[in-house]
Image (cartoon, rainbow, N blue to C red; front, top):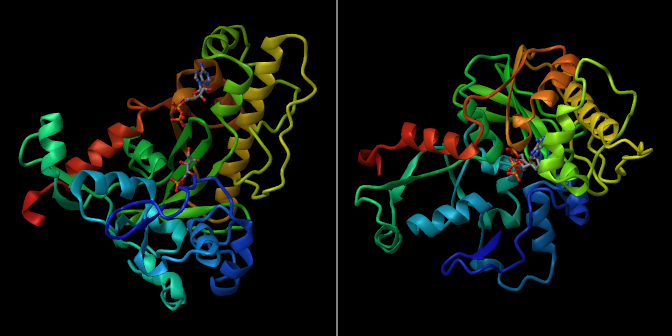
Amino acid sequence: MIVDSVTGEPLWRPLLYNEGCPDALPMVKSVAPPNHTVCSASSTLCKLVSWWNSDASNKSAAILLHQADWLLWLLHGKIGISDYNNALKVGYDPEIDSYPPWLLSQPYAQILPSVKAPGTPIDYLSEGIRTQYGFPQDCVVCTGTTDSIAAFLAARATKPGEAVTSLGSTLAIKLLSTIRVEDARFGVYSHRLDDKWLVGGASNTGGAVLRQIFTDKQLAELSEQINPAQPSPLDYYPLQSVGERFPVADPKMAPRLHPRPDDNVQYLHGILESIARIEAKAYNLLQELGSTPVQQVFTAGGGSKNETWIKIRERVLGLPVRRAAQTEACYGAALLALKGCSPDEI
Ligand SMILES: Nc1ncnc2c1ncn2[C@@H]1O[C@H](COP(=O)(O)OP(=O)(O)O)[C@@H](O)[C@H]1O
Ligand SMILES: O=C(CO)[C@H](O)[C@H](O)COP(=O)(O)O
């Protein structure tokens, strides 16, 4: 979001995380290091540059916020604060804990938010919100993280080699690694998690495609009739619309959901198996690019309740796959706040 730095009013249409601004890509590639995370049309930096190059008249009053930063501003009232997870795709370097010189030298650097570690206390909850909802006076608001990192924290995976696949509307992968891996050619990037790295990426495949074809009730009923030990010969690339981010970064990739068999059980089997193949390709790619090898996969999000799918994925990945004890990202966000929350530091 690009907002007025005083009033918080949006100065441009808010953009979703997977929306692309290919018009800005050549300019971003001309300033960033080769294959940097920002060198993807859906990166936050491409969104920022696309706005900067538009007819925007109020550049001096603007500030960039991620959706999570904007929500937190509504809670604590201090505008222009982000965290190093949300800020990764605008170009923040969590290793040096700073925006890099190539970014700071750009004219649009003036609208970048200040960045803190995830879970850093910012301020007390603003009085209006506190009284409206009945929170205690000492309720503190901390910086956040991204949704799939919060899902990783909720799963309480702590050892290098442990990974979390979030099967929500999309498929997001996070593998705890001692080695940082980044390669925009495949949509691979590393978020910092304290002194380690969460290597992974986000595919546009996932539950949203399933919901385009089946109701949640059908998903549950049809899945019970699938034999997960039996491989499906059907080979699809389930996407809601054109464009994939990871493990293939191709904004022009077309969805492949045909041929459709008459039997819905077979069709769903083929789709679940095909998404599992994309997940397997993703984990193999991370290892090829040098991350700590994956040993155990936890799973979160709406797709994690599907036991048949978990068995299919175990067979296709050749790895133990377990439903996380806590599968909601908000649980991880609360753990982060608990860890960071110390009013003395405000
Ligand atoms: N039994 C099921 N098997 C597989 N996927 C399911 C099942 N039930 C729901 N889903 C999928 O879960 C997704 C919703 O999960 P959720 O984590 O709430 O997504 P998000 O928060 O990313 O929108 C839906 O897109 C739906 O297709
Ligand atoms: O696709 C997503 C939304 O469901 C992912 O959450 C998002 O794109 C992944 O971002 P990050 O890896 O930075 O947490």
